[in-house]
Length: 346
Image 1 (spheres, rainbow, N blue to C red):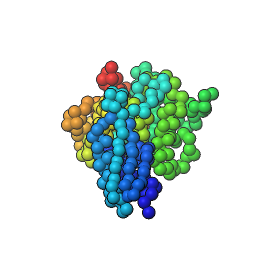
Image 2 (image 1 turned 120 degrees about the horizontal axis):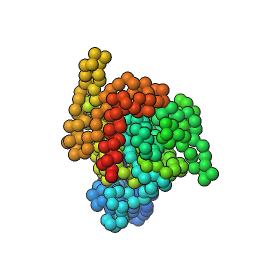
Image 3 (image 1 turned 90 degrees about the vertical axis):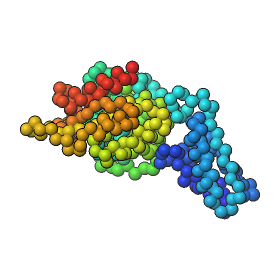
Image 4 (image 1 turned 120 degrees about the vertical axis):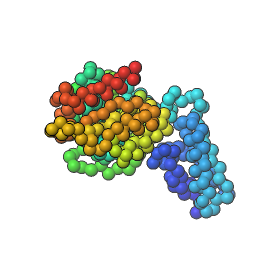
C-alpha cells in the first residue's frame, strides 16, 4: 500500500551527486503528500548549484515512477538564492571552528598510501615551524593517529563541558581511539559517523590554532562529506603513491573536493623511492606518477617523500620522524611541503 514511509524508503536510493550517501539521510526530504495516486515531494537543498538540483530531481522522479499505485509524480526542489551561499562553498550551513584559523583535510583515494603517516609528520613539521596546530583523526573505523603520535591519555572535560584534546609533540590531538578501550571495534552506520565528526569539530576545545589538520579515511564516503558539510575547508592535501593503482582512485578524491568546491592545495607523492644501503636509488612503486597526475589535474605538486624504515619505526613508537630527526631527508621533505603550502595559502 502506498504510504509516506514507502515513498521515503524509495528515496533512499537517490544518492547525493558524487557521494555514497542518500538524500534522505542528509535530511533533504522535507515533505511528502499523496492524493489519488499523485505523489508530491519537496526537497530542500543547501547548495544553489542548479546542476545538482536537476540531477536529484530527475533521479527522484525516476525512482518514484517505478512504484506501483503512482499515476503522477511531482518533485519540487527548493534551493537558496545563487548569491546566498558563501563564496567557494557548496553548503550554506557550515560553521567555523572557534579559534581555528584554517582547516585542512589530508585525504587519499585508497588505503595503504601512508596518509596518516604523512598527516602526523606534516602536523609536527608545522608545529616546528612555529604554528599552533591541531590534528583530528576522522578515520573512525581505523584510528591510527594515537599510536603514531604516542598519545595514551584520554581527553579531559572543560568547565564548558567540551572535550580538551591531549597534547603530543606540541600538537593537540583528538581521535575516537582515545575514547574507546583498546581493540574495541567501531560498528556504526553513517549517521553516527556524521554525529561524531560534528562533535569532534565543534564540541572539542581546540583553543587558538593556526591550522587544524584533519586525517580522513580513504575514499569518498560519509566522513568526507560530513566534514565538508560541517565546516568550511581551506583546502585539501591529497596523498598518493607513484603507481597507477593509487593514482586512479586519487582522481576520485580530487573530483570529490571539486564537487563541493574545496580547493586542492596540492598532491604529495609518498613512498616515492628507496635508497638501498649501497646508495642505489630503487623506485619500488615506480616514480613520477604523482607529479604527472598533478600536472594532468592542474593542481600543485607539493613534493616527494622517500621511503625510509625510520618513518615507519617513528610511527610505531609514537615519535614522528620530523620530531626525532628533523634533519633526516624524509623530515626535510615534509618540512618543505609545509613551507610550500603555507606560502600558497598567503
